[in-house]
Length: 153
Image (cartoon, one colour):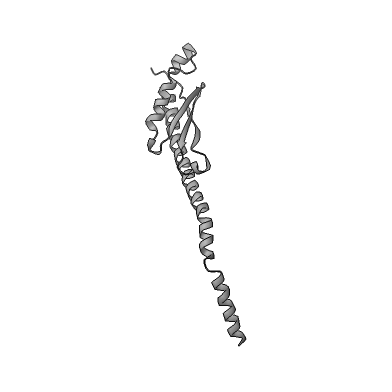
């Protein structure tokens, strides 16, 4: 008889807890969706940063290739015949804009041996607007070595 009372008590207790799983799901579902959205935005940021880095690095290499070392040594011109507009064009040509990356600025610094190109861009975010963050700023730097001019006979 004791076993029957125990079973009856367990049945009453389980009936009292009916629907508790539904309450837990309703409570945690928004948190899980927010975390999913944030992970999608983080993935987009990392992919955009990789693409921007590749474009910036290609721009640095192309700039280093086009620098006129002889003209620079004669005129002392730091930029050596390559303009910022040209460097920006190199970045834009090599950037896959399918993700919505918008270039904000491109800066070039050249020394006697290297060219450094710094690109700053913004990426609109999809889900982070829920926490009042609508865009992310991405900054990358590409560097290339300037090959010295060798006179050929």
